[in-house]
Image (cartoon, rainbow, N blue to C red; front, side, top):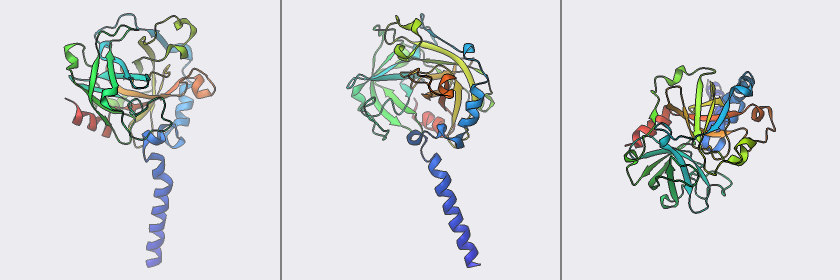
Length: 284
């Protein structure tokens, strides 16, 4: 009997060593890109939608819905990503956008940049920055590439915060549901027709939801044109509600070197589960 118990215990330990590291930390390990998370299935699904069915366009009129989206710049090293407001004082972006020395650091380490080195500029259009907000504090969610920031000044006095989708609706997302990504991808990685756009132009990328990842973390796959600078962009449903946040794209620099990148497969953290719990806990 003792021998059997030992064998069972050793087997359980072995299973933990094999399986858990793949999902140990989706921010550090990018578990969504692993086979176990369903990336191969997503790889096949993204090819079912022709590239001419997705699009990207520069935003000429920053209306109420888009006013909450802006650049989040590290003033120390001049690198930037995208962030968006969800209430009077709360912003959402990626952990890697607020990492100390973002753009220079080689690996994620959960070392947030000092708040005084970060500036949020919503409704930005090129060099025109109608509003600028300094940052009070930064919270990096452990395990997810999602960060929560608070501003010193009241956001809703100047812009209209985005609404988060009802958490009960998220499990009902399905293949080819329409989505929109709002953000600030670098124009140098976009098609030639955008070459004359100003730096820090906002773009709306129209694409599709593909499938939920099989990882234990709330993640899903989309088909959408995502480039460097899009990090931290909100993913909106057809009701202009936030369902997730861009984490990464397979074609960040428009190199189209793989089937995934040629078909614009992108990776998203869904605003549900422990990620949503942390947001609700920290928001105003």
